[in-house]
Image (tube, rainbow, N blue to C red; front, side, top):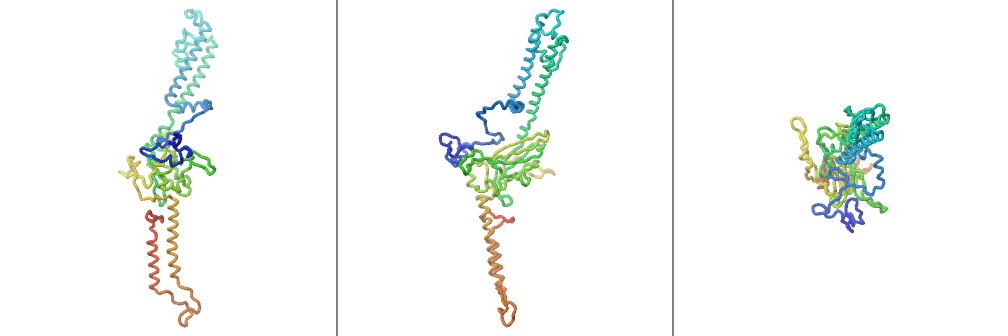
Length: 427
């Protein structure tokens, strides 16, 4: 809570909460609950209020019915048919009443519009038989009643439209791939650790089903508050977190669990974020996995998110793949497991600057002895004796000592990894 009882979340203004640091103090056990933008199960924690133009929902009634909850959809389904049957049953009864068919029930000389229709209940049953094309054969329209024939055609046409609309809604709702996302899982934590000499933010995704997600792709968004140079406060600013769009690594062949890596470079929003700053930040990383369901061809989307306290600095995911009996076996019991690794605590920017400084020191430490040990330039008359050739160079022992000194400086100046990047001990 901020001043005046305001809730401190991602969208909270610093003027209300007393600054970003106040919103992030005390998180964890016993601390303030962090408000999510997207829940761990993928549900968006956003509610719409003060919607004045609600008529727009009726302009797209099909999508509105599909988006309703199941109990509401079933209620609408039952009411649509029941009200249609009751409405046309009332019209059939009213037609018989206006023609006087109900007053000549026992008169064999009278030809009613609908035979054996003796009240509202029989008219309701005849309406059901007509719309569902049951046709028991007991109640029949007379060919001498043009109004009955026209009403029969009207009910048949409208009944087919109701059937098409309601069955279509139920079919689309049943075939929605939302439940398919339940078997697409994300790691409970994200980690930050070196990969190929670069700091990377990583998380893991997996598919529990044997049927695959076709054309799977992954993307990530950083959600956090932002204040522009002009003083404008943006409560939920979205920043793209690159996961391989330029290289095509965002396209996944999701047969086994994969670790998605975001390289923290100068274009990354985490470029200046160190381990200590990560603990004091207030952000949320939303990850989105999309693809087509192999069985139906419908697009499926799975979502999850990571708060700043769910990002582990200096950890790496355990391996889940093993070769067993000529096939690869995935151990999902290790899917969320991590282990600690040696990782610099500074930001990626500081790490890059230190690497550049160390390389510069190494260059000059090698270049200076070579300049000092080079033989001096000799002129025509600078030689010894009466010869006109160049003078003698430095003694052989001096050359060996200079070479040994250079090699020692190369070995001891900087501790380097095989791939040319600095170790944590060098920092």
